[in-house]
Length: 99
Image 1 (cartoon, helix red, strand yellow):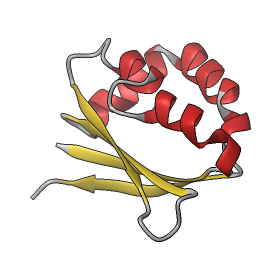
Image 2 (cartoon, helix red, strand yellow; image 1 turned 90 degrees about the horizontal axis):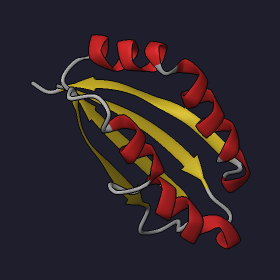
Image 3 (cartoon, rainbow, N blue to C red; image 1 turned 90 degrees about the vertical axis):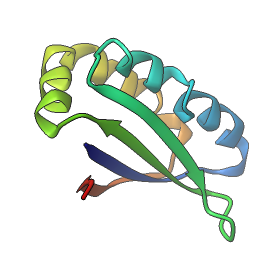
Image 4 (cartoon, rainbow, N blue to C red; image 1 turned 180 degrees about the vertical axis):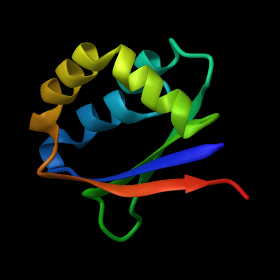
């Protein structure tokens, strides 16, 4: 299994909406659930910095994730653009494998 980790900075006025779209039942998770290789999303909020979040998307393999992203490229890009207003920063932390 692979865990794809992203870090976000979210201003106070956008936090509720960000959490709604990025949590385990949010818009992104709903989109990813189209693929049987998707295993779920975890949304974490920093306990000392309320504007800092991590998402962890779990997939059976990186190949499955990449194939999904390629197959749904246009919709993925549209979703990504539509949520840009919710964050001030977004960065890939990395792709981690379960051991």
